Length: 497
Image (cartoon, rainbow, N blue to C red):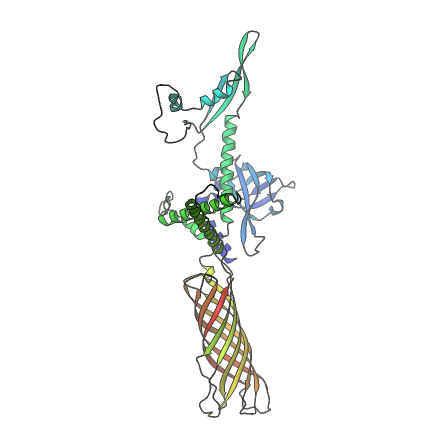
């Protein structure tokens, strides 16, 4: 949720460069076809503008995530200083039009500022009915194509295929044929092209809707990063016309694009070959077949790696053996000293937000612990058997928790709760205690192999408070409460999934 909210704030800051208008719905007509927004002349809205209304809603798959959905296509009929009236001509989400809600408004004039009008030319081709198609093709040939048909002229080299060039952006063609009526010839239409002005208008709207569609696809992509997107829109200090970042891609960006294109082309090659059935290789020699099979295996392996990277492991479970570094036994008791003191830990870790440059470095941790230790109380050493659980948070400063083949360092804090039994075979006395430690701290190393199995080492320190809940004797010599500092070093195995 925090990722989505912080990203949305960054996006709001770049509205001027993105031609977005944040507006509130003031009124909705009883028919639901007329809308009044609180955006007007100051937002550079114009009458007869076409627009698209968007709204930010919660994702259906994840209620903590936000996405942007189109509500409908609108056209402006009136613009005031502080409001504007719009008519809906294509409604997508009727239930989202709630009075007082905030919407995002894309408008044609704000999305396509400074774009010159299209240059059109209308070409009329007149010929006999049987030759009209050939005449139309001939009218679209370039001068070089016509020269190539002269017998005394030969093409020595073809750099590229035949193409037609014009000073206009588009040419509208009308086909007419010769007809005869009462010994008089006249032209009659075979094909009439669209009105030139209407064609330009439709083309402009198509470009506008294409930009809106690309925007929706980008912001709704789970991998979309608002921070880097906002960074690309930053202008130079004191200059609102030039971006700080160049329009040319960096060497690293070009390398990423090349690798992505290479993976896609290799995967397409493997699929196209295998779709031809078992006989696809009969036309290849042994050497050619070996090369192709190598390409197919490489492409399949790249596809597999891409799938693994696109689905990072959010969970990690581990089992540790922990050795007690601190000795809380008393040296005055020469009758009993416990030498083997250890703990067994079972842990589950969860990464709430993956593929985010900041929040994916944090993981929520839960752990169950069985402890076999000893503690000195009232001048006597007692066996200490704990059963406890912990909840905490780990921070990975250098790599994400699921990163493979790196030594991943992490720091964490947690609290512990449970109960403890104090026993002794030398003294006829025992007691039960509840235990609590908050806060506690740990630091660890983790190395994850490609098969998701990991080795780990964790060191921890905590101050544990004990409160007595029951005793085997009435006047027990064991204290009602006490605190001890535990330091442990654990080694374990884990698995990510």
